Image (cartoon, rainbow, N blue to C red; front, side, top):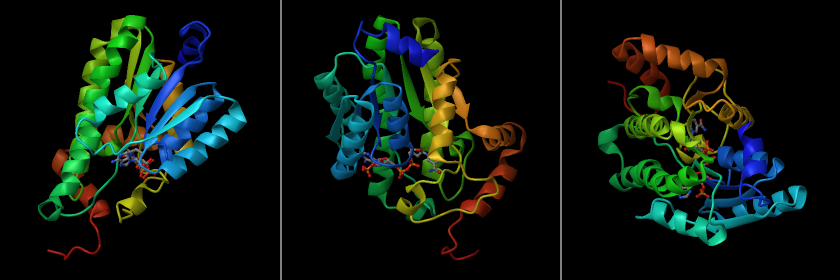
Length: 274
Ligand SMILES: NC(=O)c1ccc[n+]([C@@H]2O[C@H](COP(=O)([O-])OP(=O)(O)OC[C@H]3O[C@@H](n4cnc5c(N)ncnc54)[C@H](OP(=O)(O)O)[C@@H]3O)[C@@H](O)[C@H]2O)c1
């Protein structure tokens, strides 16, 4: 079991150490709770310091693990390098990196604010790529560790009215699968976790709650499936039967049909009909 081997083998008696971005709420906070319960020391990163501190205090009290927090806007240039430097300032060896921070946007691409598109490219693509590049070599040298990059089932095919979101998540899937195969013999697991519609603040932040045919997932479902899948070194992880169904549709349905179908569900009602 990967989590046990991280416990027993990692750096002698030192507890395993996980770095989680976007840990102030939602899926990231759930990873923090699950890993603290397994005895991980944690570095929690996001912009909302008070939420991070509240979570960290509770986890330290309940599980007696060390929890550090760092306020960092990952949309800033070179945020991946800053993240690495911050992690190094707490512990030289990271057992588990979770690139979870992210946000959604819905609407017609030609009308999207350019600054928000740039922030999304930075948080989803640059930070994931740069931090994987920076954290991976030490894990490979230790022949131990894992990186979980959070993508989405939205990255399995193009989606009108969330074009940039689906495309950045498609990048994360392709990138993680390729690097995962390169790292396969090194003892390091790269997982790309693809949640479906999950009940978090994500939809409120994106100012739109798309209609869905598949049942919603909970952060608990996502995190338990993801951490369990580390045991089998699986690279692409979806959640439950809705995840399998979406993968199946992405593989076998003609792309135009799929795009037409999904755009009906994600298209904001406020858009004028054509
Ligand atoms: N919920 C879903 O339906 C769903 C489905 C598929 C995939 N996902 C993916 O799951 C991941 C987590 O989302 P969630 O559902 O847990 O949403 P959430 O509750 O809104 O959490 C998003 C997290 O990302 C952090 N974040 C966003 N922008 C940031 C920035 N510029 N710098 C630093 N931190 C930033 C937020 O922290 P601060 O606001 O404190 O900075 C927050 O902790 C995302 O990558 C999302 O794309 C979600």
